[in-house]
Image (cartoon, rainbow, N blue to C red; front, side, top):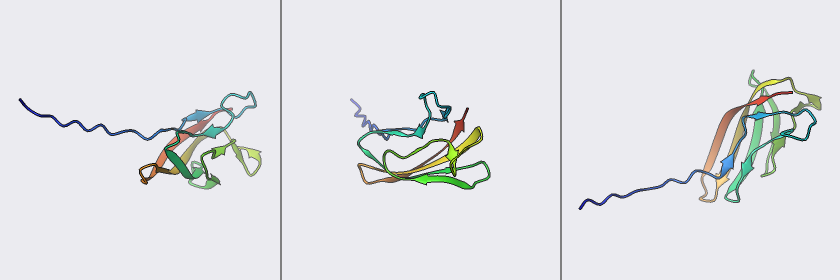
Length: 102
């Protein structure tokens, strides 16, 4: 008989949407990662397509309303950089595109 050791790696309890629609209809009007109790968001940074930082915040309720300096951001693709810590003490970075559609 052969012994097989199976290691199951748990994914982090985090969901980061790749699209949002800040158009005032109260559906997906803000970008916000959905995190479980095992995740602590240390920072959220949003960059435009030229690499300019346009929004920065922190905490598990970190979000972006689709505005830059109080004005509506243009529809397009932006980059989310989410720094977070797991309950295991690991510091991780999630980098992904997000589409803003009006």
